[in-house]
Length: 293
Length: 298
Ligand SMILES: Nc1ncnc2c1ncn2[C@@H]1O[C@H](COP(=O)(O)OP(=O)(O)O)[C@@H](O)[C@H]1O
Ligand SMILES: [Mg+2]
Image (cartoon, rainbow over all chains, first blue to last red; front, side):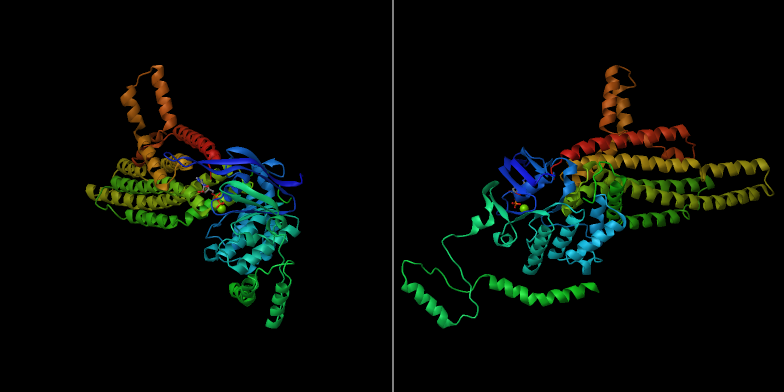
């Protein structure tokens, strides 16, 4: 097994949008690779070509130029899909199937069967926190639940690579937090993860490396600290600071011109998310009991 | 790795087939079948003023008409809905992102539709056979009673035998089942053709209409050939006829239904010949459908 999970080499994808339309280049000469065991984030605004790149990687689209491979095996080979689990953008599975049946169906497609498949499905539903809703039809699932069942089906054949397209889009903060925890879980089990998002902050705590795409091109790539840290700035967060202390700090900084400038002071932006998570924690537990009925 | 990849796996095709069957059953196909069944039973009480043979023939005509309607509508309309539905639901992405060859996916669709059509036809065939059998008994009794009245005494054995043979010829025969087989074969050609079309079509409506055009052309093909070639035997006429036959299936090859409802016998060799042609067309269209689907951008 090669130690590079994903290789994308000079990938270009041109769409022919039908007669009377110009050819459209959705992805232009993009190259990057993902090492086995790391979490790689692909970030960029809507329409920047992230999903197109994923689809070529999974053999759903043929590249116009360039090559993609998974663990050294060309993406165009059906067999390369054995090592990868995919969660597409806005997944909708068969609405008439229950959560359990969905995972079983995709397991069967991967050549699994019998007790082994059942046990695996149960375990994945537990891992993704979907046990309570396992016997309900997908038609009644919320967006976050669909993403989690999508994650369970992606993991059913124990792939070494997980490809997630916008797993947190349209999901509330608690659900999104959960999905990020699941990504870290997978990483801990040694699974390589390639994840896309149009929101940087959603990925920054889970990714080892990120690539930023814009208009079909890779504009920046590297380890996350290199890309987001601002070298000449320092941030510190205080708890229960009195107004007097804050005033003293301000005075201190003002009294030492040349050794630093105070740019801003205020409540950290993340407090709102933390507050949301705290108050909804209770709801989550209620939801779990509610879905069991 | 827990799963080892096989390029051919009957269990994978079966999983896809069953998911297609479920999808189709959710299109309320059972209701359609139920309505047809009610009409079949109703038809067995109708036409009381006709003579014995006519009554049986009418019953067969109505039932075979409905069986064909059932089989061909599903073969063209339901099949045309399958692929676009999976694209819209994005289940196609999730399925093909698994180690599933695209051929398996197409075969799952084909077999799923065929199981539903075949199952429906078997049910209707069993029902028609039962209804016909019972009706045949009543009609024979009536005819003999009529003879008795007419002659004012017991009719001679030759007259009874003749009347019985007449009714039996219009009653339940093996040829009826061959007629159902012919419907199934024609439907299977239509399913593969519709799958092929929906691999390139951009809308469901387009698939249905195109498929329906082929259906019409397929029935007129013999006429067309006779008109243009006038039975000529020049090599180019053979070639043109062959090209035409490949491009558009000659559906009149499966038209034994009229013969069957008229009570004529169908030879076993004819049935085998028809099955061979049906399989050939279905196989051929599936190969083309696969070649188109494998190149399809999703
Ligand atoms: N099948 C297609 N045919 C034509 N254009 C497409 C197709 N798929 C995507 N595109 C176009 O390619 C561009 C990139 O799309 P996408 O890869 O989905 O972006 P992202 O996932 O980054 O939001 C978009 O402008 C989109 O309209
Ligand atoms: Mg996208």
